[in-house]
Image 1: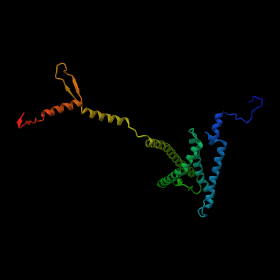
Image 2: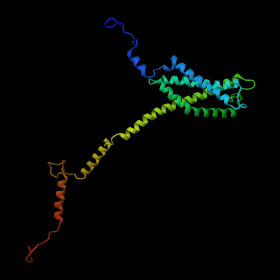
Image 3: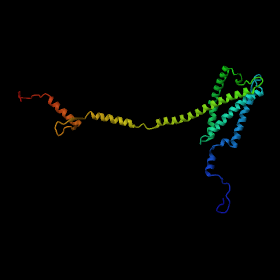
Image 4: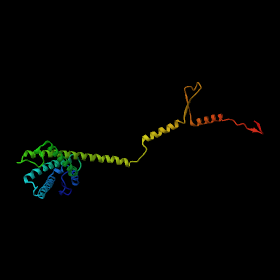
Length: 262
């Protein structure tokens, strides 16, 4: 791009401004599968797998597994962790939000709730295997000599457990999202102004009408011209008529003037 003075401007990004701005401050969709993301995930996997080697050396000598048995045991866990990892990457890219944050949330749920589910699943499978007497499906036992079919069967069972764990964690993640929306709904009811609702106003108006109706009555006119017509007598007229009738019913007291009746 040539400026007004004839010089070529350098250092300007070639992509659109919106793309550059969006990539500068947040983790974009698909960033977990970029070269740097794959390298970082592979490095973390090597570090995690190295801890299993350290654990083997920390085992008592009389319980330390041979390298072949150790590799068969840890390979099942490695395959299961790869399944969980790629499932988290896939779920993180389903939304338009920050995939790195969603991956971290899934990872934390797998490391807490998922660990408990894996333990329950392994124990349940162990009880089922003992009940059915499936010798080759006992975790950690591969026969003598070693049988590849036993490792394949145990690996398949462990992957089924991981699928169960990931499904439950995904449901928990959805429940947390709905729980947040429900919390906002309830708190809004706490914070809203407690005004008079339409139902209360209508009820109050109905009560007022009923009270007013007790003070108003109708009568039919006796004249022919006013037949079949109704005359509304207000509460004041009703009170005046009642007072007049009461005066008529009241007995007249005779007054005496100089002892003589008037």
